[in-house]
Length: 198
Image (tube, rainbow, N blue to C red):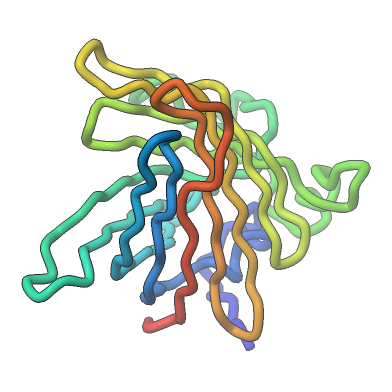
């Protein structure tokens, strides 16, 4: 059972099942056409909050080899999709003016969509010069995300779109990631199974 802390912002209730540190393994199996990359990796993911209505996200992986070499990492923010109002901080370092909105369960319920879920916005930054903005929804213990809003630096590798799926199954966080990259259409890329460790 997940216990909600008294300091949890009401907007995070639909995402509260993610909060914590998760660890496990995953596999990359990506068909580049003439070659297929296959590797297993260890994976650690953290979802936390600092009292504001979004989740902080970090992910790090390491190869499951003799030396456990670091592999890739990413970080980002997850929040319910809604218009920002005067009580919300920003842009930049500007403080909100007036009461912060959506501070009660009843107010958050007004954000529920026609599919009985909550729309999400997820921004993820990679150290290799790629930034993604995902849109999707959380519906119970399942999250579906998709993006074609990928920003790349001039030196980044070709990467055009992606989908991600997360689900809580028998107390484990299962995930799958499809990408359109290196000139190929959207293709299965990686998946994993994580257990809560903190």
